[in-house]
Image 1: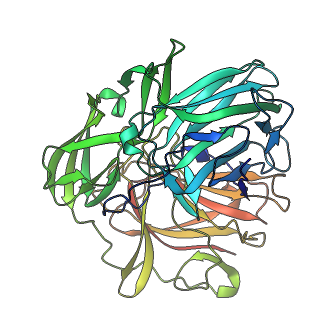
Image 2: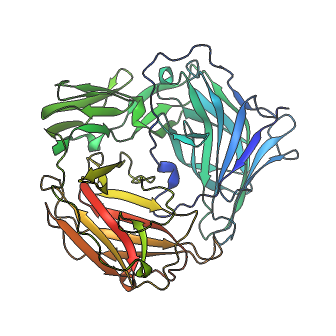
Image 3: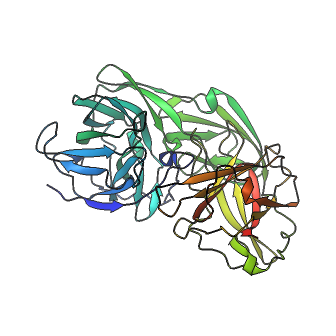
Length: 479
């Protein structure tokens, strides 16, 4: 039996499911290396060589079971916690390989499964990995809401286009919530492996943008990811199985490649001002829905710096400002995605006359065209803002940004002294849209964040429903 390396991470799903996170890999432009491992087996009484494991949610949810199994000597056991478990309220994890495998010879991931009682497994799939701190969901495939019973049954997760999986690291992942009523349960998986079945047939790709032709105006130069989509496959059991797949499986075409052209998997790059029509295929099948991109070329930038804060540093806890010493921030970059798919946010630091500020932009939620989602994270060093009365930030919105009528929302999350205990999220809804081409100073009482029970262990500041492009500076708590 092969040994499996175990890495444990505690990750919380806050507003959106973490496993819908769309994390792009940096695609190497050089030719792919050859002779990757082609081993199809993942778990057959033991783990295949090179397989690692990282846990999400309740980190002790996974173990081996030598009593309950479909065949052989062991199975994988997953214990979904109760909704009030102080050590985690969901069971999740990823099985991955650091050196990648070549899966081009297979068309399904198959496994046998059963549960302690009939229930639903929220999310299962492959193509999602976190290897050496690098997240990758370029070729993620998700099977949602799989119904399992108390009897061992074989299940299949189809591969949409195996030719894309020449060097895949994400072998299998799962994310399972407690059943209705918050009660936990146990499920088992055995004989987990990739297969090539001639009985998989009738691939039917779903639509992008609801199968409609969308128009996206005022697009700036840069890279933009297409939305994820669904596809339906006819399984050996005779049923039609629908899966959600990353846009990395799509082959994109541009009617005017000088304006925008396909770049990284599932991504098009806008190169200059002009118009072009973006269409997509899944394998050799056309996907309904298209995107007419009208580009303005180079981004609009603020012409002046944000106002310089005048408060004494003793009365400030800064998250981002040149005027104060900033708190320890894990990431200013967004790491959540809109649960409907196809939503990512671009992030950059900018400088005007020596003053730094943040820029968040998004044109990828092109179906709804409505919001930038940014989660500034300081989980490793929570902020105690108990003595603070307000949060301040300066925002600049370019006049050509779409969705200028949005009324933005800010959220603050507190994880409490005992993580997993009385965690709360406070939400503030700004009453008006933001004016354009000027720095707008927002100074919001912390008492306006409805639902926030504590300010002593703040870990996230979330921007939601903002215009498509925003520039932000001087983010701080003060009294």
